[in-house]
Length: 76
Image (tube, rainbow, N blue to C red):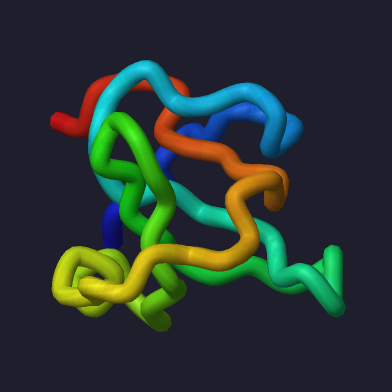
């Protein structure tokens, strides 16, 4: 059994990730729920239920300021 990865605290949507990748983002209408979304270094893309699905999304998000969080350490 693998341990869950360490995540950063939730960051405000006014701050953007420094690296492209998939991050967890809060839902607009339910701040207790989250989904996965891709950041390409410039813009967010719509949500996916898994990191792999988020990588396939091509529609740009219309909600660029949702809170987000990512890995707190590099994956092993």
